[in-house]
Length: 118
Image (tube, rainbow, N blue to C red; front, top):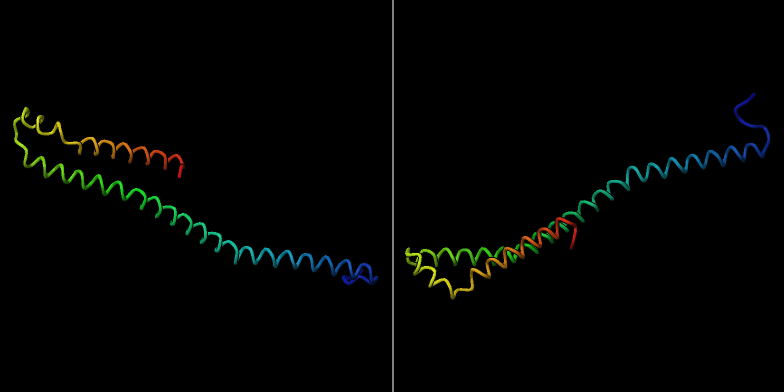
């Protein structure tokens, strides 16, 4: 029995089968060598862009809160040490309420982002 078929129909069938196998191997090689690195790079780039967007989104409220906290620290240095006088001076200042709202806003946004919200 020879390896090369004698009949034309068997030769054509063997040739088509060989081309099919060669095509499958070529497609597998292209996907493995070319496609996977590009997919990984695209996924990494998307993750970096998402992280950058989250960071910049959180930076603005955090900077505002940091400024408010710095202003409150400066204010605290100038206020008297007597508790009664201190409370009477702070009762009209809305910065403490603003700071509390800002902290709640940040903690709420962080919770939303950790749950996958955008």
